[in-house]
Amino acid sequence: MAHPQDSDQAPARGLEITILLGLVVLCLAVGLLGSFATTPNLDPWYAGLAKPAWTPPPSVFPVVWTALYIGMAIAAWIVWRHREVPQQRFAALWAFFVQLALNAAWSWVFFAAQSPLFGLIVILALGVFVFLTALRFYRIARIAGGIMFVYFVWVAFATVLNASIVIQNT
Image (tube, rainbow, N blue to C red; front, side, top):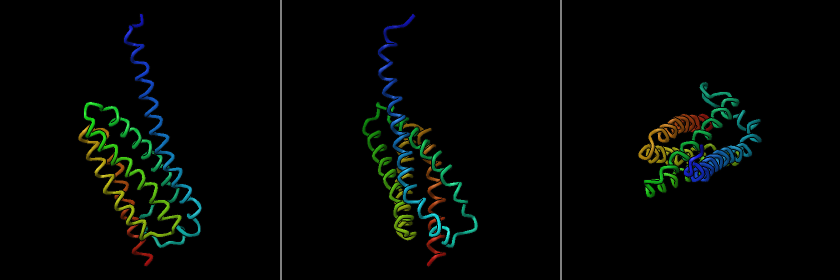
């Protein structure tokens, strides 16, 4: 037998699913936008750069980034659902969207502008905002902060890779 409150929960559940899907689409769209800058510049420009021996093959990056974008969306959704801390939630989601914009900018600066040095500047700022987002998310929901910390570790790796490329190509 259906309970009257079940019908009250359906619109809320529908909104939650819509927000989750919207965040997934947004994060994957950022990745797609970045690929528009990256893909045309992989060969010959990126392929011609001196890179450290530990550089992952190009096929690894889309797989890792796709998983990270989906994880970021889930983490943001978890934080969005915590309505009991509106000011903390606003600050955390603000940091999230800033890091997402920096994430999109990096591909355009590094690949489209073919500037590893300016890419390094952008990715350093990205790392700061990802770390800030991870901390703010953690204070609201530990799992969301943990997801963002995994992303921070990848950005830290990418920062070292970017810095190595700058050093090896100057």
